Image (cartoon, rainbow, N blue to C red):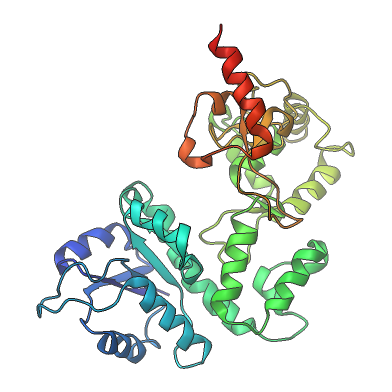
Length: 370
């Protein structure tokens, strides 16, 4: 079924339509339009159509340009989103995802101040043309996922099973308890927790890069990588938002490893040992083991360098700043020493943790003297 979004902007209609044209797919329809001018008329417009739409996309600076009636909006995207969330909580509006669509500098400013918890996803206008397929999948997943959460947002034995599409007895009890405590709260609160604390953090679920790292595989060089993924279908996450966030259950990967590959711990082996055992078991001769990054010592890979986006052992990495409040089920992010020294893709990791800074500075001084 096609998911319908409204995109509200202050730009001319033809410009707004061009901005979101790349997101439109067979199962996703985005109706671009200018703001209604006044706070009251805009809210009424959304309220009258809340049963017909699956999501809302908002520009941040709605008051920058007047609409076709030469009326300049007297509200911003954040204030509109706040009021919509309030009315959804009060039951006056149907629950649906709200997406922020704005320029990078505005996004950074917003996320560092307030309003970030209002939105299910933030899209950068400046870089989205490189990610149309990915973003479209996530927009569809958000719309579909909200309906699943709404249908199961009540106290029942199978509520969490239906939301996660998994037997919760296999999942970390601390995560289950946190999620269970949110049942009965507004839909966007549950959605935010699942997206930000489960899907966007490696740990219980892992993305394809982390999966390759833990299996020791170099994706780019492995012709049989897709065939290996086929052996892991049973471990793939099928729960809420899975259409937009491709993930695998780590507990299921470890179960698969123990049942099919080796009783020895996956973590204890080198990348070459892991790959050789997988190749032997499934006759996947096209698999190639990943190699150590520059200045790294261990090939017992377990994470991904946030600078190079390649496999790395945690002992060869530096902790990234801003991870003081991780949940117990979440794995911290690292940047390799070489990527840190070269400032590789620094926008992805910004800075190392305070406990790592003296070590990094000493390395920089030592290398600078050579």
